[in-house]
Length: 619
Image (cartoon, rainbow, N blue to C red; front, side, top):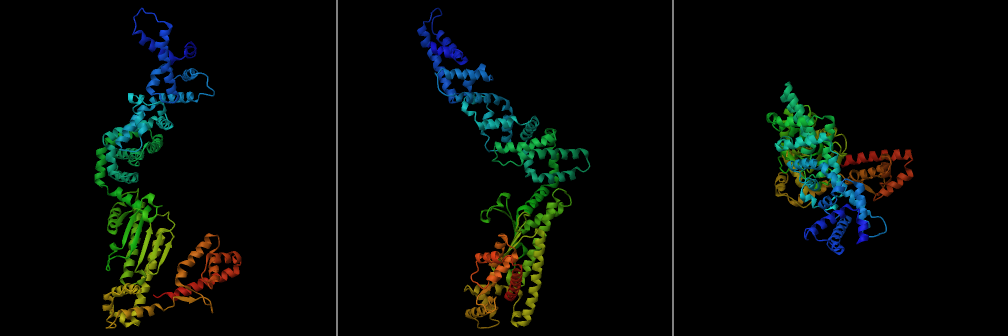
């Protein structure tokens, strides 16, 4: 006993436990009774040293409660050197042990961290109350725990509760400047009055703020008081948007902290933001009047236009109805930002019909002259829709006069200016997919011109064919179109009774076999392939020039060769079948520097391709 007492006599904790046990024992015996050494050892020393050892062990594995730390080491809290000495005595009391007692530094650090939490409790309470008012349901558990710092429940937590994650939260709270705290307190007061929830009903996201402010400025006119209201509301909304409008309901403390950094920047530029927010809250009635006078049409319409300009995909395709309207073949899908990189099958897009787009167009035309912010987005949308509608009308005209090339035609038009390919055009009947990469509006103009040209040429072609083949005059353009579309199904063995009835005006006893035979003979001319080398046995098809050959050229170009080399390589290999990419690479490697040969073969390829495609055109 005496040897142990010699080691622990300098311990504040042991002296406290000794005193407590001595007072408990004294209360149980007569006042005049004298204790023998054996009694002291059994009734005071052993219980005290047992408690001391228990405290030591719980400190060592950090299982000691925070309340026990406060009660046992009350006078040493805040005194790092004395705590270190105290814990060293505890370690020495267990006898000599080799090595360094690493737990001592860890325990002292956690205790010091625990003591610093008191500085951020009020901040934690403000943020926790605010996130509840904003209905943020993400991970705020540590923040919520901190709000209970002064309660008995918190004191029951163990020392190992003082984790790195907890200290990160504590540091984040400590770093919040006073100006930001003032703003958050004011925002909390506004939220309690229902201001923030009301704001979210009139402004859906921060992209609508500039438009709303433009409209509010119109309402303010030249009235100085109303102008100040607009300015205050603009500044207050810009500062509070990161927390009120940008955070999703699933946001946690990390996302909230990131939003605070934006508020910090705003406070640095304008220290009066808390006051401006309070004034704006008080001006709620006037703001409501502004909103009611303009309704929600303007900001939501501009926001829709902006989204469509960034992520909209117009689709023009063959309508289900035979006699269709523009509404039947033009539609729009609007992707979310995160869906741009996903595959089409995984994308969930909002869909707009043409009537909905026309309604949006009408709204934007009404407000485009009234607002400055968002006018560019509105005008771009109006221009895009006008051009898309023009293409759709031309498409319907081509269908109405029976242009067979457009029977199974589809165009996907991507509004996103950052996309490399802006337009995908699919000619289903020919199995061709055309990709366009030119500037967006320029591409739409070019598209219209091409379709206008097709329309004019088809009309001329029909007129010539009607003059040449009298029987075509027995059918309207719609009937010819129907016949063309149905005759395409004959190859699959499908002959509709209506087709037989229509063609009976040419041959009264016509049968399915007559149609199949005639169609087979028609498809034999012109030839499906042409000989590309005089006297050669090998030939290429129209499909080769449209699909594989361009892909070969692109592949060699991506490997660093000029397109002329790729074309020369193709021309040199046309007599071989099948053509492989390795054959082309061999030519490029061996003859790529022979400029004279490359120029000759490349030019010959272009001439042969043009001649071939001209011969293959049926219409």
